[in-house]
Image (tube, rainbow, N blue to C red):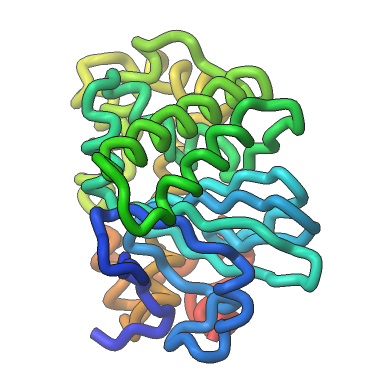
Length: 291
C-alpha cells in the first residue's frame, strides 16, 4: 500500500541503542532539509516521543490539531499519532524518544491503570506545562547527561531509573494542572472499553453493545465516560472512528468506498454523511486538503 504521510520508525543515531535516545531540537531543525521526511510536515510516529521545550514559543501539530507551546511545555506523543513541528529561531528543546518495548519494560512494576493513562490522548491534553520551580528540570538534566555519556558503568539501568522518575514527576504535575481521576475502578472500566473499541470498532458502533460486553448498563458506561473525558460513550466511539478514518485517509491511497467498508459501514454514502457531520468535510475533501 502506498504511503502518503510518512511513518517514522525508531532509529537511534548512536551505536549503543537500547530503545531510548534524547535528541536536541536544534539538531533536528538544522538538518530538516536533509531528512527523508520533513519534520515540519505531518508524519506518523511508530514510537513514543516526549518533546521538552526549553526556550521560545511555537506550535505543534498533534492528530489534526495545532497546539500552542512555549518555554517549559512538555508534549506527549504516543505511537501512531500524526504530528508535525513548527520550528522558530528562538525555539529550543529536546525529543525524548523511546520504543514501545522500552516504555512497557520501564513501567512493568507499576499498576496497569497508571501506565494506561500516562500516554492516553483520550484522558489528557498532549501538552503539559512544567513549572519553573519543578524538580522535573533537575531530573531531566541528569537524564540527559547520563544518556549522552559514551561509556559508563550500568548506564542502561541508570538511564531507565532516571526516565521512570522523570515520567513520574510529570505525572505528579498532571494531578495538579489537569483534571485528574482518582477513581481507579472508573479508569479500569474505561480502559476495558477503549480496548474493546480498538478491537471491534469495525464490527459495531453501538454503545449499548459495548456496555453489554462489559457486563454493565449503558447508563453506567455513559457515566464513566462523562466523568473521565466529559463525553458520552457514543461520542467516544464516534471520535475514535473519525480519528481512524482521518489517519487512513492521509496515510494511504485507500479509496473512500474501501475505507467505508473497512470501518464497518455497509453503505459508503452513510460513511460520507457520518464523516461530514463530524468534520464538516467529505472524506475526499479532507484527503485533498492534506495532500
